[in-house]
Amino acid sequence: MPDTNKCVLVTASSKGLGKSIANVFAENGYDIILHGRDINKVKETKQFIQKNKVKTYEVIGDLRDKEVIQSLVDISKNKITVLVNNAAIPCYGLPLEKMNNDKIMESLESNLISAILLTHKIYSLMKEQGFGSIININSIVGKEPKKFRSIHSATKWGLRLLRSLEYVVSKLEILGVS
Ligand SMILES: NC(=O)c1ccc[n+]([C@@H]2O[C@H](COP(=O)([O-])OP(=O)(O)OC[C@H]3O[C@@H](n4cnc5c(N)ncnc54)[C@H](OP(=O)(O)O)[C@@H]3O)[C@@H](O)[C@H]2O)c1
Image 1 (cartoon, helix red, strand yellow):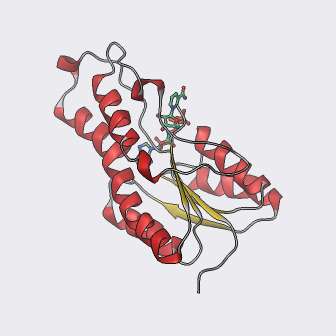
Image 2 (spheres, helix red, strand yellow; image 1 turned 30 degrees about the horizontal axis):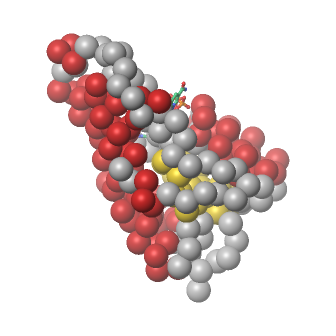
């Protein structure tokens, strides 16, 4: 039987916007599945979040690693109510011809493919349990073209195409945030 407690998984929740999002959910009584690449930052965030007296779970690692995706899915079973796809590398701000294959693949895999693979599995869990919301953190470059942002824009436009899975979270009203 699914646990009816509220629980959110926020990718890259050990710093930046992801940490703030996790904290707002915790203030609203959600248990938090924390994720980050730096174990020390994840531990610091866990302490910061726990002032809200909610449960926290942690997964460490790069989202391009399929075992990390699987760990996030395993820990989400019977508890997840909200997934926030937040992780993304910053835009390189380079003209396309200056982007080598490694940079292109890093952007596509970190910002888009990992979010699709995670969503694919978490969406299945949510369908089985009959409820759940998915929030994709986007960008203005996912709405309109900007100079020197072609690959970053492509990842954010791709992420936007997952929007048929998005729902409004009642108190936060975040929806494909730009
Ligand atoms: N800040 C802005 O002005 C702005 C504007 C528009 C949209 N956004 C969006 O807001 C979201 C959060 O950005 P932010 O401003 O908080 O930037 P940030 O502090 O750089 O956070 C991005 C996080 O994503 C993580 N990440 C990147 N690739 C990863 C991978 N392959 N596996 C695991 N983690 C990965 C980074 O991990 P590491 O710390 O290990 O590198 C970092 O923690 C992003 O989706 C971004 O595109 C931000």
